Length: 329
Picture 1: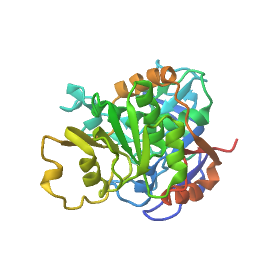
Picture 2 (picture 1 turned 90 degrees about the horizontal axis):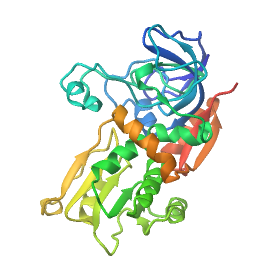
Picture 3 (picture 1 turned 90 degrees about the vertical axis):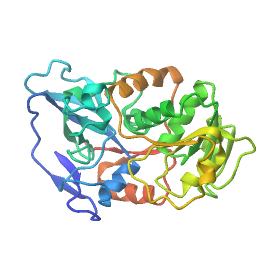
């Protein structure tokens, strides 16, 4: 197999040849057809997440075909198309798993972070955490749904029944969630970097009611806002934009430090909450809803060997929608 490998924090990924991995009990091997590139991959590269195990193969928006099945697996078949998400394993017995909160498991493994991921031609996955995808849509179009879509869905649910929804950071997750929100009949307010006309135009194309810079204020207060950009300075801006009793949802796994802000921005029962990972039920719910909502991802495919270039472009905010790596045959 071929893989783009991170050997230490801050280093560029290195293209390596490895022996094809073999699945163990309860596991499957997936021949990868596409893997989306996520901002969380940058946090892995930069060593901003605790407990990273080097060397590691990043990537956690995996679409591929099962090409080998380990002992005890009856849930999948050879040739089946599956998606492998960020949450790659949970213990099933801790207090959180036992109470339906496996996204908060005390002993989890995460794809592309604490177990090898999808910037490769093959990967090993826990069969319990590989979603059947069926045969609709192409592999590249589906890949961003495996994280941007899933985390976006969980954050949208946590935003409650907001009629006027703000989205801060209109990238991979933002442009997917906007489509679901519009399908649900909500009004979408898209906040981008100042001067990012491409992202703002995409928001208009997807039916946004309003689109502007992150420090702008729409005329009407928002019912809720979701922050996808990993920028702590956006929190007081979002709190300022939501109405009394409104909610701000922080959807990233990592964010820069929060600045000091006056208590009056939080007062009047505004809420500030975070999203952590996802559950398998989140995945099943979203993957059922996605075709009903008519979601169309805005994607650009790149060869696997160009992963470093793609990550650099993502860091600079030069990716519109989502980038997807496609392994060479």
